[in-house]
Length: 386
Length: 160
Image (cartoon, rainbow over all chains, first blue to last red; front, side, top):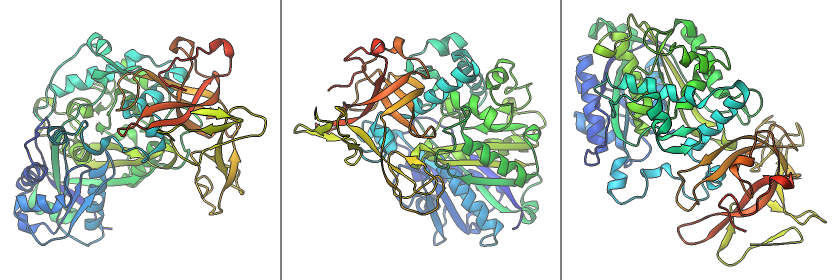
């Protein structure tokens, strides 16, 4: 396998843009990534795109927006990890010598569905019969509320500790011009916002929104021609949940533990080496539990980790400098690549006010949906190095 | 929905959440959940899977009637819900007695939130949990406390 690098990263500001076509959003992010890489669209040999709810053949339509045609184009659906799946396939295509220059794109326009008269933001609400757990009333905040309820019972974690994750990420988002929301909230405001699924209040749940992000990938050798700051891909792991793998033992997502261990081994680093993490904080509870699952702190100590400010600036590792899914936003198919764009920019040292000092190793954590027996559908861990 | 001799009898306009998951046990007035079990490793799956996902040995699983009993692993109150559900139902993870690795996602019924506690013993009871866009009512497996002192009929938003 060849060593692979990211030489360009682009992202549009996230928000609610019902009139902004998904193809145009992806094209704009792609053009930004190409511009940063300093390469022409005609050099791109294949496009890999993640999306769940917009019209088919979106990768081809994004190519149309950036001025490319007639190349292989691949569309990936893996729920919230759709563009992590696209990135992994793009990474593999370069690593295995199928291509030398490829584009990985994540796109989602959720609000256009509402504009068109749908009650919900696209295919997120499953039709009856698709999944028995959803038919029984399981919903996304409910999944993480159930995990949080168990974590509280086992480790004495408190609703305040979960809420502190949202306070931190909102604080981070205030410095990120790409974030959907850039508002600071107090702990009291987070706790007193409307209850969605106990103990999750509204400000601990990610918003519905639109966005796109893209990266240009090539070999480590080619990368030197395009930038003085290539970002090397140390590991790109994507796996699916094993049946019942988290059903016994402590409150955790075992698929994450497994994927993270595989990624650390492949990248030759440990959790203690990671400077910056973009973590799948769809709901505050997920971030606190993932501190433990990623090995950033021991099992059961996620509450202490947030209490002591160890996941913020000045702590042990900066988690979600972008504001995360909670505040930067979570346009489903855009998220995986958008997380990568943030860590790439952090490692390039171009993040301005939200720059993590001296960031050398970055990690993204992106989960996606459910498989049989309610096991995680997809879990992606990517490690990049300056 | 009526239950006679442990058998679900659906009224017009009602359907089960899945047609092959309820069965009757002679002498029991409540229907039982019908799972499947691996002949090799003994793992029990519900909702049922044709092949064992635990040992992945490739042998076809066989029918296994569940005892209906479980304990509460975790719970939340769903205040904001999907179309067709009544808000404020208690969503739960229930660990089944027949196989402790088997954890179901289901609603609690006939219990006030203040009477719910993790590790409490539960038993299955079928209830109508939602209405589809076409007006059909969906019958699914819910769980109520085993301890009669914790049971408050009608609590939870489900109907008979």
